[in-house]
Figure (cartoon, rainbow, N blue to C red):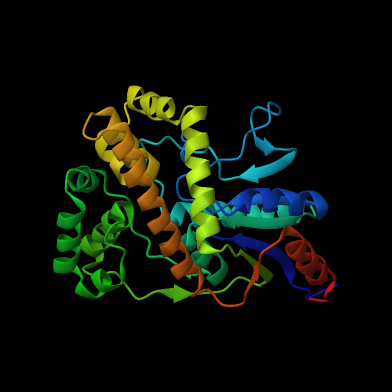
Length: 307
């Protein structure tokens, strides 16, 4: 029908809540393909630490898991910078590709910034990466970066996550070029969007995070970080990736003990889950579910509604 809006599903929730499993379940039931909205899963060789779904053996040149095609996984070297602008460009391209196949695009991830930017149609300033400036900024601490942004653009500094090195560096880059970071312009895409959020009790989530960490350590997460270091990924870069990569790197450099690494990492992952939920609560029209069956019913109803 002419003028009918195209439909997409968004699945969000805190780390360890089961987003990927739910996305695959819905993709199988409703002829969908999945676009990852995770700022670290784009990087090659960062699998266990980011909770990437296991890749099928075939086809080798594309990312399939359990027979479902995934986009924006394993697409860039961890030595390279991947920006929000890069994500928006590739995610929008993937959405159109899925529509052309007559399939259902399912956005799945825990990076609230990526999800908001995509579904709200953020129009980002066109400022090219400045390699020389970035090399200088990479050597600075988070505190130094935040102070530099504060000096350049106090208004942007008030709104930014001062613990997020890549965002700080990008904001400084834009402010250095344009004198200040321009006000955000939004042009929402012409999609009919169902947003499903996975709701977990705080204690249940803590238990899930703890069990998952033990499992990943047993599966070889330390070896994963060792391999990244062997490939030339710097300590500074690993610090910037945060969470698992930050604390495992500190352990490998003998700055903290194994037990201290686990203790600090668990605390940081739980804090990260809280920050995720703070962001997700600001997103409008989220349907919070506790069981996969609720998500299936919501999706059935949504797809049967006239656009």
